[in-house]
Amino acid sequence: RKPKPSHLLAGRLPGTPPAPTVEVVPKRQLKIRWQLEVGTIATAVAVRSIGGAWQVYDGSSGRLGPRGSQPVLAPCCEVLLDNVDLSFSYEASVCYHSPAGCGPSSPSSSPTAAFFQPALVPALPPAAPAPLCVTTLGGILVRWS
Figure 1: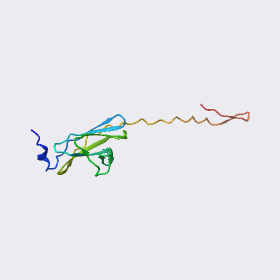
Figure 2 (figure 1 turned 90 degrees about the horizontal axis):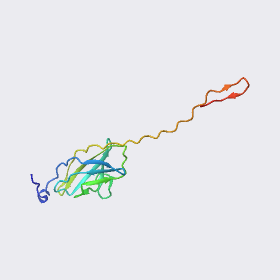
Figure 3 (figure 1 turned 180 degrees about the vertical axis):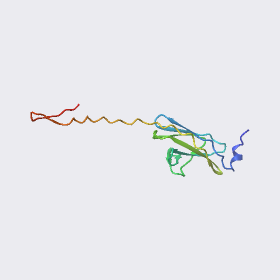
Figure 4 (figure 1 turned 90 degrees about the vertical axis):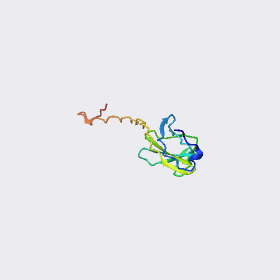
């Protein structure tokens, strides 16, 4: 089926986008990608750690912010989110904006895998000394291993 020209779609709200993809990339970053619909002028991108609150990606600063942040302008369909804590799993959702308004949010992406850092194991304290022994010569004998 041939897509309609964007000037014919300007008066209607966008449809539901497919779920975006989220990928962990080097330097503690998340790469979030989505497909654009014809007639989309911007995309709102929401991200959260699994079980956490949704935060909106601000297209002007490149950081997570409150609702009402600047959406990502078309034709961009990919963002990098810096300095994420990779001990959490993350998911994303997108929402298309058209001249007529905002459409519904996409389903959530598949969650990323969490990368657990091994905990540092503290050095073991020295072994406790053996009980004190009083010798028959009037001295004290202390032993430890």
